[in-house]
Length: 235
Ligand SMILES: *Cc1c(COP(=O)(O)O)cnc(C)c1O
Image (cartoon, rainbow, N blue to C red; front, side, top):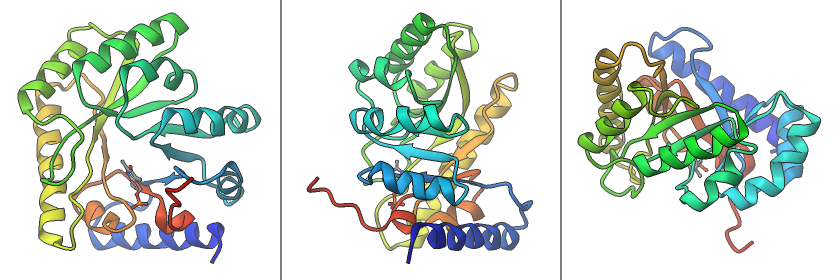
């Protein structure tokens, strides 16, 4: 199996899940999560038509992506892993979106660095919805405080595009679904509360659970293993 075939298969499965859940064709975007895979793998995916990529670690992404983006400016890379404040400066120099915003201090640092570069950046609020995952806002109060600050104009270089979550790592489909439902319901509530903010994106679903995520309203699935194969963490 090669990367191109894998992408075709995933797109087919996304399309079937859209149909099954009565959602418009093409309403779910596919992100290829290329962490731990080399630039050659990214290029292979690009040649198969893939333009959206996700990376976890700033250092790795900053070595891999800027040369590819220079060559193919239509490629976008989103940061999806926990982000330390001291890595923000580098991240905003090449990423088009930070999906893993989990605290107000991170917003402050993103604003500071983007203001220096005179650029705006898209962000998603990552929400902790499953017992086993560690990342994301853990309380609605902290999340509301951050959204309120954005709504009040405190972060003019930041565009809040929606929400992201990771379901727990389990075979229990009910628990996975529950996590996605939690994010969808929370996003609906916050969208009603802040109708002026463009928070339409629901980033949820990975290789093992993206069809469930699509049934529960995902607009963007983050697929790594099912496209690029197993990751070699020893590298
Ligand atoms: C690694 C990762 C993915 C992709 O996971 P796969 O199971 O390989 O598809 C998706 N989202 C996040 C946040 C990740 O860290």
